[in-house]
Image (tube, rainbow over all chains, first blue to last red; front, side):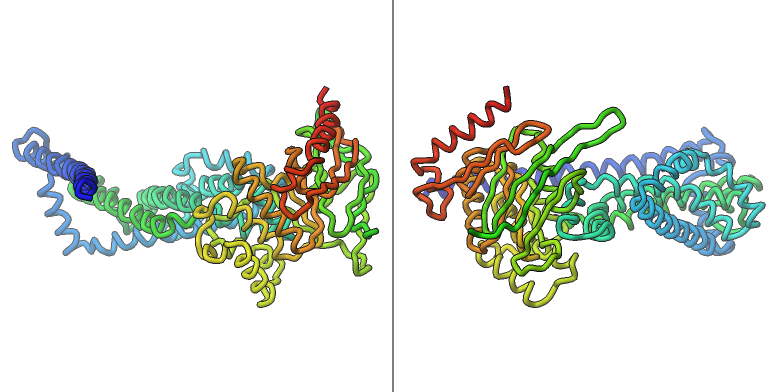
Length: 272
Length: 257
């Protein structure tokens, strides 16, 4: 009895030691990340202050913060951020809807998908920035053009990956639906769609980033507002602080959008 | 003499690709009586699964006819339950939701039907797992859940395509006993495909031996075991068991030469 007790105690502490070890490791990873970040900032700032780099071209953390404040108070930065966010989310949602609808149609008709395949592959590998001038001529400058640019970057890849995901369902699972007296439509609703949730989520993750890329390209060429416009405007008037501030804001937006989808993925994880 | 539920006459089927035609079934004829349990054995790749797909109506035969005699005299295609090799329970549904999949697809989710599914689950020890995910079940339980999914539609004829082949030997013996019991008790007519001769002898009333591809009916062997209780495990101890085994073994060995 006594022997047993001590053994449990030892085992418990081993388990605790393991858990603590893992936690320590995680903490170390997080702190290393923070150290690199602050080291970079410190290096950047000191290089700028000592004149090692020209802060006119390379800016500096302090100037970025000053510029951020200035933009926020005087140049309605929030509107610019809001516009870029809105355009990105709009293109993302449209890409998602178009992708789902097209991939579904392709899945239902194998003839249609074989006909469409070469077109999709070519359109997907085409550099979409080449299309931007066309969009400006066709649609003018403004929100519609920018959203279209955002869609054009992500939509073809999205159709291809969703359709590939749909087609990778085990054929026997579809046979099962037929043996139960179901139709192709039942097979899609009961098997293909739920089976493809992981693929759909990972496609969404890629698309939100691509939509942002497309929107910024669009704003470079055809906008009066938005972070892409601020970058182009800043470079034209040689305000590198403005350019770098906008780039950092884009980083934060990209991270935020990615985390949003990841949260969704976590909530669904384990169920599919 | 019981009336035959299903009659196959000269069924032939070939697979085609651009290079060649591969005959799979050649003039297959046999019948299954109401309430009978028939097993089909044959060399691997001889077209057994193709035959089941044809009976289930998933493929249409290139030649020959299938005649059904519905006990009520009507002419409609009888309800056929098809149990595949693997259970294919969906992880995104609970065990119960998997069991009612067929009812859902056929818009038959009436209180009587769902109550029938629940009663089957109670009978076969799955009731307390009904709200769990399939991955939490053992291999044998999954196979029983798949059978309940098939039985929920109340089929007149059950087709079983090596339903035990994915299980380990011990589970296989108990699950095949369980499933045989379920089928016998509900008085269903069943057609089982297997490559396990002992399984065929211990479960079936009659064994049909197919030749290698293109498959033809080589021999039909009625099984009469003097120990015949309900249990396939006991059947393996019947004095005739070894003789039947040898008969089947010889018939199949001829084919392999």
